[in-house]
Amino acid sequence: MSNLQTNQMDAENTASDSGDEKRDPNVYFAFDHKIFKVAGSYFRLTHDTREPCYYVNLGEMKGAIPTKTLCGEFGIEKDSSDAQLLATIGSALKFVNEIRPNDSIPRELLDGSASWSIDDSHKEIARGRITVQLVSWMSGNEEIVHNIKELETISNDPETKENVQKAFREIAEKLGIKREDVVTKIDDVIRELAYIEALRDYYTGIKKISTNLQRLASLYRRDRSTSEELNRMQILIDPVIKKFDRTFTEIDGQTCEVMVILKNFQPTVDTIRRTRDDLHQRFMIWRNMVDSWDGVIIEEGPEVERLLKLTYQFLARNFMQSQTWRLGGL
Image 1 (tube, rainbow, N blue to C red):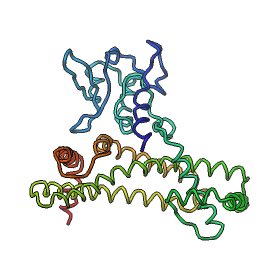
Image 2 (cartoon, rainbow, N blue to C red; image 1 turned 180 degrees about the vertical axis):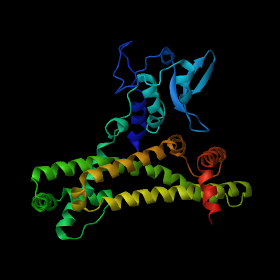
Image 3 (cartoon, one colour; image 1 turned 120 degrees about the vertical axis):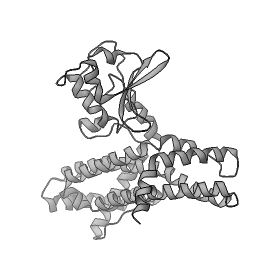
Image 4 (tube, rainbow, N blue to C red; image 1 turned 90 degrees about the horizontal axis):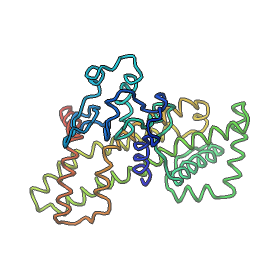
């Protein structure tokens, strides 16, 4: 997904460029203690235990201080603004990879909206999907369509546009609200679902890795060592793919009936946002791996073998525990 990565960086790099101007700690990580004034310092999860730590330069070295110990080690009062901000660091790092003092607090923690942006194409896909639901609701047979060309064809059909307007009027009458209120709520749902479509788009990069491993397993079937490693990688990645597929199937099922969406508007929005945040957090660790596989020619050779070793290390580091549990439950 083109904007998921670039806007992740936007969300992480919103530090103040206004010198010592004090920012609102309700919106920014505006710390007061001098330890947070150290140049080049930042918060990040540790690579191994995924514990939030504060990284500071110590000459030619970089020190990592667990966030939970900062108050005690530097005399920060527990009821101070700094302590309250430190308490949110762990949650904030679920949405961005890195936080620097004076960065903005992720919007997910402020008002529930996303702190990363999406392409217009994803908004159009979401709009097309809801359009299909509105039209099919008129016929009494609501359906889910994900084929982009099919969505475009249906959405741009003049008859479809006319039927959508009829649907707005009929839904407003059934719900006892104004047509304008129906349109507003539909637009709000489209905006929320657009993030799901953006994540679905990004997910194709992860699925492609799985497909590439299958193709390479065939190419390396006579290389015993590489073949065994590929087999282990497929064992590790298969449950991950199934879990992602299940998540998308579930959110599609929960948002496939327009009347149910409108009757349960806020709970539906909350469900979409929870799914959005869950998927986004699970995708964050895949960023570098998806980039590494992008454009790779699937053939035997040292470049592919180097990438396979990196992929094996990545999968074992991040998914071995869940896989062990799964096998143990057989």
